[in-house]
Image (cartoon, rainbow, N blue to C red; front, side, top):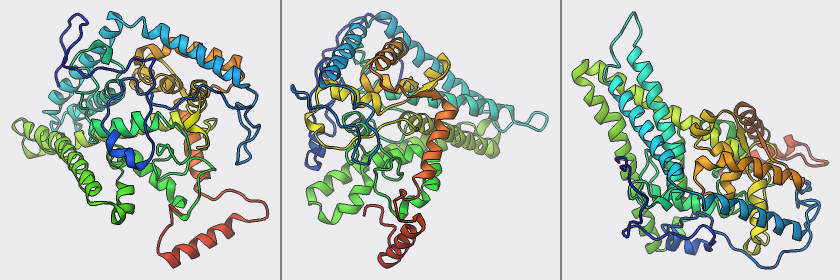
Length: 460
């Protein structure tokens, strides 16, 4: 993909018309609607069902017995929060212009130069200087940073439609394909439409642990989760492949394929073929083409070192992306929700769920860029289609609003948030503590059941 040239912001009649940012279409959540809506493009990325009538006062405690952080708010206050957030959004969206367009073009140029320069350096990755291979270390570090920048600040945000208002066909969510093994259209469905619609709703938001981690005590425990510290590390290392399988809904297909119709099986196989083709394309580029290009500069050994450099760069990107994402969704202080009345929540209630179900990472401007500004996860969940460079501008306003209404604004340094997640992963690998019942007894029963059924019983 080449960078779009500098040009005036004009409409391209060939591009898919976008949903205005103040429109909130709905998306069916039942499985029957999966294929009908999978590739529908929504420029706002904010699909939700709304109601004109706010519900009664919220209970002080949740079904699990945990305190409800929004229990003190009246329905009128919740709707006022929504109106104030709408005003913040409108001010930013109405002021988008040349400065924002210059930002994303500058980021893309920087990323392209970094990637091309790093790959050029890696042509000499096997050359030793005083016992070390400086080109390998420099090229690997640069390529890893380039992949992080492409995935986080560029790919993720372009695919959210944050830059569709520019009507630039080369920086548009309907035409962008990123440096990731998951096809863009599959990721857009699972992430933009499902996750951002049902943020942290138990049973609807599959991003709550990606189906392999238990990250909330209200999630059912089984023996499978006893090993989740291992799953967690493996998921981080293989993150792009895990996301590809997740976006494809591979687990659901394997569990339900015997009950699926032939049409649904054929639809899945077609999507799976697209994913396999993307995986092959990525592997060909990183592990065949670029190593072969380095052959003339140092022979087979040089090619092998270029291959390992690409492998390490992908691991760097995978671990970094995984760390940023878990820090925005799983640390202590993040709230979850049951699925009662989600389909009739008001606009204010939807906003409230996004604020309480997300967490921020504090840090420098460089940190924010390298996280794709997902260090402003709260603001991103409020406005997924807002240009990422504007999140730092609205974050103080959101924090002040939440503090005024006595709502927790979860934020902390990267290492603190990551440590919080790892502690939660360890704690929740074990069953919840129950009055009058020891955890070891629960574990014994689970082991006996697994032995009888020959299954870890994840979905029991």
